[in-house]
Length: 206
Image 1 (cartoon, rainbow, N blue to C red):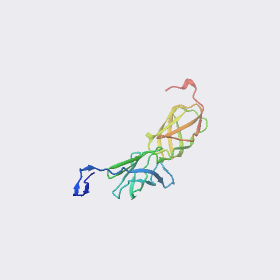
Image 2: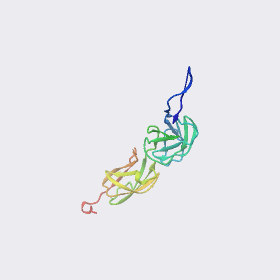
Image 3: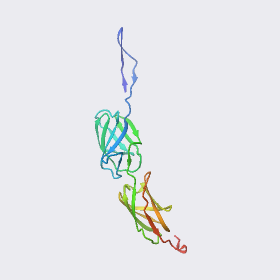
Image 4: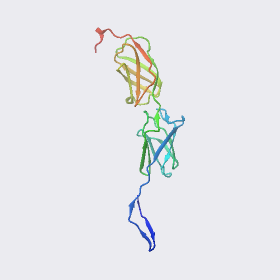
């Protein structure tokens, strides 16, 4: 913004040289969801509150998390905003606030809940070559391209997904192996196992 400054002196009031003035960018220091902390479900849909400074006045703030617009943003004060959490994945996602064209960002205040793989089916010994696994748990997200699954270094290609269940195709398995589930930049801390009897080497062909 360009502002005009006047200087009061002995000879009267004189205009000073014009200059530029910029308001401080929004600063987000704390994010709290309905769950009571700086985290929320990958499905979104709950209210979150952002605390900080330089949020300006009630002029339609824009809020986004990991590049996705936050729904129903509401200005409550120069230090507080609320909005409806969008669906997303990842830990320490960027939180962006734009007020009157000025943008502030923080990647230290909010994370989506990490994936939790609870059970894999089948979990008993079975032969696997192009076999389908069903995995249940929590916080798998809603986009297949953000979910990576493997068993003993072999990719398990995801074919169907909800936030609490997915199906994947595994090309080959042999022995008792743990499942690795990664959503965005977060890996499941739980690793259910499945047992494979293997395929005789003479049959291992494509």
